[in-house]
Each structure stands twice: as C-alpha cells, then as structure tokens.
Amino acid sequence: MEQNYDFNSVGKKMPYTVPDGFFDQLEEQVMNEVKAEPAKEKKPMKAVRIAIRTLLAVAACVALFLVVKKALPQGDDTITDDFTSVELAFNNLSTEDQDYLLEVYQEEAELIYDNDLNEWKNEESI
Image (cartoon, rainbow, N blue to C red; front, side, top):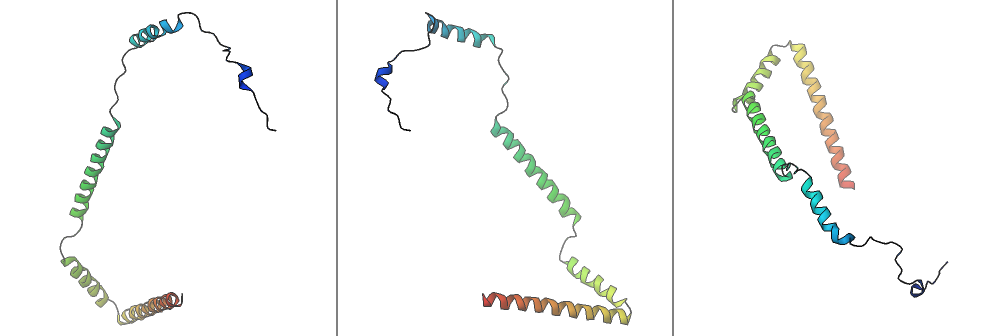
C-alpha cells in the first residue's frame, strides 16, 4: 500500500485567508485585552508552602517526642523495677502455679530452640 506523492505538483496554495491588516492590529488588540483584565493575586510559591509544612511536621514530631519522653519512666531503674515486680508476683503464686509456669516456659524455650536449629540446618543445606 505504498504510494508515491509528487508534492511539487500540489503546489503551495494556501486554502485559508487572513483579512488585510490583521497582524498589524493583533498586537494592539492583545495589549488592550491584557490591560483590561484585573491583576490576579499572587499565590504563595510552592517552595514556601512546602517549607511551612515541613517546619510544622518537625515541630509536631518534637512535641510528640517531648510528650512521650515525659510519659515514659526515666533511668535504668525501670528494668530492675520490672524484674523485681515480676519476681514478687511469681513468689506470690502457689507452688503448683509456679511449677506449671516453669514447665510451660521450658517447653516454649525448647520449641524456640528447635525452630531456630531447623532454620539453621535449612540455611546450611541451601
């Protein structure tokens, strides 16, 4: 479906016409239209909006950090206090309950060890 066109035979005829003096008056008409429109308010630049949002986000993070830091217990004593409270709670249990908890703990520890050992063996075999 290849066709060869002879563009030289078509010629350079222009099918459209423009009124005489159209381009001479065009500049003057555009300038009159621009002057007639009221000046639009400039919107804040995008960079300024981004900077303001960033500063607000940083301020919110700092405020959140200060609130959380104040709410959390301070110092290394918290670990000791937690262990002490667990130990006191464990000592307040009956002997049967203590034995049961120790048995469950041992079973869980063995399951974790077995799973870790199986994963380690699988990694070595690959």
